[in-house]
Length: 337
Image 1: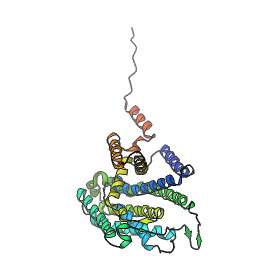
Image 2 (image 1 turned 60 degrees about the vertical axis):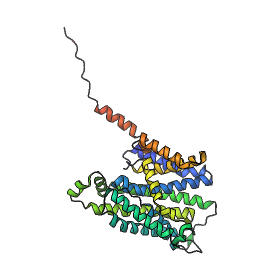
Image 3 (image 1 turned 90 degrees about the vertical axis):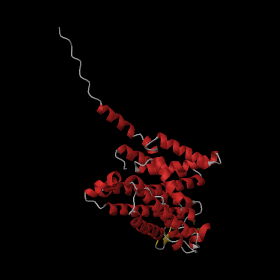
Image 4 (image 1 turned 90 degrees about the horizontal axis):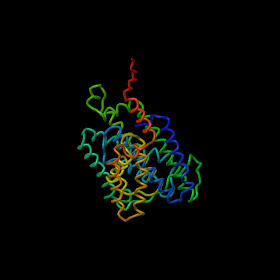
């Protein structure tokens, strides 16, 4: 799931550098589009911890994403925005506590039943915001964006500077989330999650309490989804029930399939590619969903490891492995006569 070679780390660093330089050559609209793609990558990364690392497919993960955004709305006064140092931890905490509660109940089931239970919880959260006046009801509500401030000091931004500040803040959080997951998956905790995905009964036989490990992974994924939801609220200054709908979870799953379930890179690549495909399809035709579906189907059928399977470092590795597996040819023995 994590990069294994120096070449991969160098490519990741170059990718982050490219994202950092993009706003210098893009219009405000496309910079905002890349910001949305990076927020989607954060959501996909949080779901990758469940799907790719632990083998838990959830259709209710967007509930924690939406709860993070709604937390910002609920705690922000109508007159002024609060400091990011208050709203970001609060969004992560609320989403994490909700994930802990939902996971404690849903993880008592497995397979298809787990999938349906998470979907049911997600729909419950959706109807709470959709059918009540909480959070503006079905129409949603606008909010004051969190500010970049510490105590009495506040970074003053113009209307044109604000999107750029949100862009770089999102990039920093995305990089931090990626590195944190890399570190987490290299620990014993990450190894146990990998073992649960491959063979949970064997991990039980080895003495690991797999329920607690899965619950911890579920809660951590909820925290990360809450961070992504916070950044959505900060970027758009708007919340609505669509944030917690099951289709949002399905989109995150499609990003993982597009990018690849075998690595953290797949979540980021898939989110960026999914956003680009959607924008290109909208420019080319009115049938956006049809184009997206055909492209994703083509990638899934032709690339078992997703777009992340096309990374350059894998090619010389496979070639070297094939070379080492070939038996050495016996030298010819001359005929003596």
